[in-house]
Length: 140
Image (cartoon, rainbow, N blue to C red; front, side, top):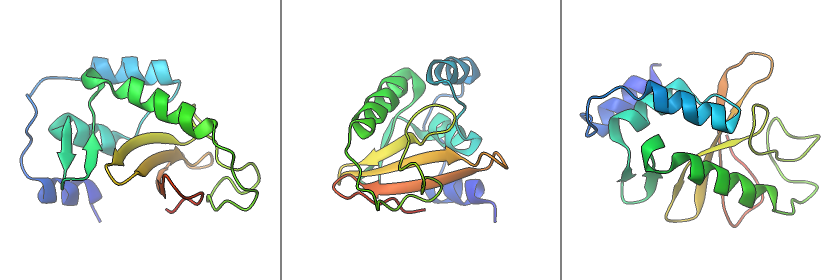
């Protein structure tokens, strides 16, 4: 299934100006020390900044995305995690945040939910994990 096409079909036409943001993404990824999923960048380029469906916030690189990611990474790194926290891919270490091997926050909601991406070390494929900010477990 072409998930990106399905997302664009649901969201409609782009609301963002048609200008290249490749330079901004390269600078952001260099600052973070890791890449971000291409599909995510395409959605952000087309629609951010926006609050979707009244709940989900997307921020663009020129609207403070780097600061958002750094703040959320810091908040989650400072969390005391239970030994039995459910987080696929981090069973031995517990959740890790930031950098090439950790979870990268992509978006959040006004309900306290967070969306993270993490790259599979063996394949390089991206996975999406979510969590309720009040709970310890992550869901794929």
